[in-house]
Amino acid sequence: METLAMHISNGIINGPVAGIFAAVALAALTFCVLRGRRDLDDRLAPMAGLVAAFIFAVQMLNFPIFTAGVSGHLLGGALAALLVGPWVGALCVSVVLIVQALVFGDGGVAMLGLNITNMALLGTAAAYLLIAGLLRVLPRTPTGLAVTAFVSALVSVVVASQGFVVQYWLGGTTDLGGNLTGLAGTMAGVHLLIGIGEGLITATTVATVAKVRPDLVYALRALKPATAPAPVPAVGGAR
Image 1 (tube, rainbow, N blue to C red):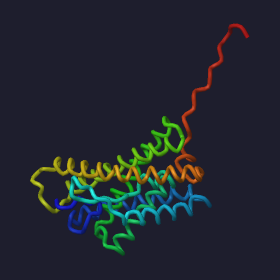
Image 2: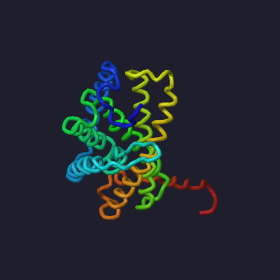
Image 3: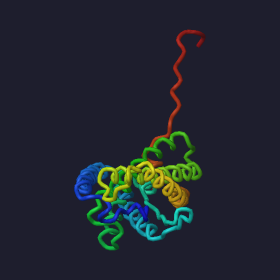
Image 4: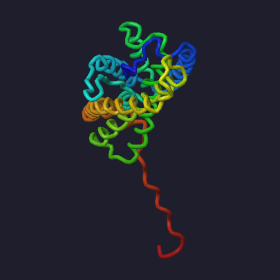
């Protein structure tokens, strides 16, 4: 395939598979709306708008991957998960993808369900699972948060790229001659490099916010630090 962009264009995946993933994306986003309403308050609502606007703006800036002959940009799943949580974060990324497809033609409109599934759902979910695990073992300092942001962003990009591989296996319109493993390896390798750029942007942004307003970082508020077990009083013996 000449391009390895995460924004799938019309005609790359056949209609039936695109329709199935459109239904999957719609159902998942409906669930995100219902769960996200519990989190929305006077602090999170304006933050969600800022996150969506920031992701939209930064996605317009491409950085070249010289070894692969392609360019990458921020996907935003990890950034959104850290700042506004997984449910609202997935909605923020989805809004950005919809606007880009309808206004700028970045990704096919018929492929929106595929793109939302990969970047908004898979990417955000993978990032938040890593965030939840890392923040229980790393110090909750700007440095620890930056490491968490970098790792989760990098992994989320690779996971999103493998979502495309599965979709292409189900309904790709070009015969790869059974070389699906080659496609998976190429996508993983290219998006590992893109993920490094994504990780640096995410880590810098989140660490900066945490230094100024740690109360605005959803992950720090929602994920409780691991606590040591309470000591068990000894039975008998000297008092």
